[in-house]
Image (cartoon, rainbow, N blue to C red; front, side, top):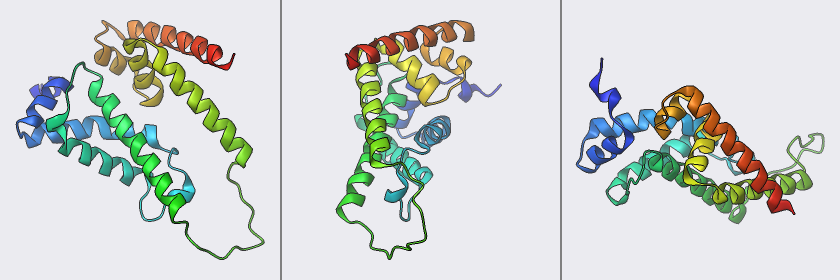
Length: 191
């Protein structure tokens, strides 16, 4: 069995800080696929020019990994949350950049727009804001469980490993309870 596969994220972060290139590669291969899945569709189509979502995620992760010397890993899910936030920030930067310098193009009157209407976009933004606000109200373990399972699309076994749970079933229960608390917080936020 490959001994490096048993390294925790915290161990790999420490190895990266000491200049271990193999640990950096392991972290990238561990987090890039899930971050790409999570970010898919979050970068609005109208902001894309040369860079697509996969490129944006990879570039953001590489930049974040190059700044590992300043990162403090306080728990097993800290790097995942840090990278996710870095991707969110980068998406926001791309949206801001695109709104400052809109591309000029001639419009074809025969084309129809299949994108969401301004009303649909506003409702979507409000729901995301309620979700993020409710997520912030949860306990750290609940927040990590939801982010790992829902946003990062981890299996229950992966969630169990990330949270230190004894089994996939224990992780499933943790995620279920966390989702119930999230729903309560989101409902409370609407009132």
